[in-house]
Length: 223
Image (cartoon, rainbow, N blue to C red; front, side):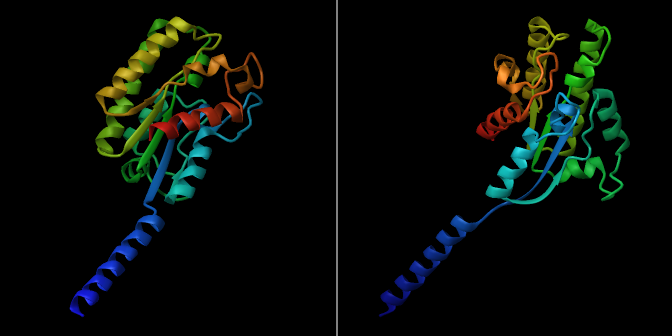
């Protein structure tokens, strides 16, 4: 009789554990930082559905997404402006949360930065690229110091009329090296240029929703 009671209790515990494992969703915060690419800006300078929006939808389906913060990202954001935001610990007026608080409490952080900064220059010089890379390392070091253990994802740059293949290769190799140094997930999206269907206009580097879906899937596969 005692054995039957013990067996029943054990079966109950096992069933409860099984239900818990099936229904459990981890709570998390998600922060996106960056420029127009991060926000899904289109060739017509309007905000479309970005890869971060697709990630948000995915996290809502697979976790308990407590908070998605994208308001620290800005069109034409530069490495210098983001670096200053973090150093000065800027806050959002609506929620009064600071950028360092957002970084600290986020389980996933995405960074897309450089497409606007380098393509908006009238003349792109080697110094501009070096300044960009130096600032990126400072940004990444700061973010990693604030958030030591969670996943930080950085996307590569891709070719444009101003950023030829040689420059992109140099930049992306350096970004990958910095990412490895600070234990980030580096997502190489340089092959988006091989897909004409990802662009609305041939002379504009911003991607359409298909391009952002592609980036989302690349990130999801690396989580």
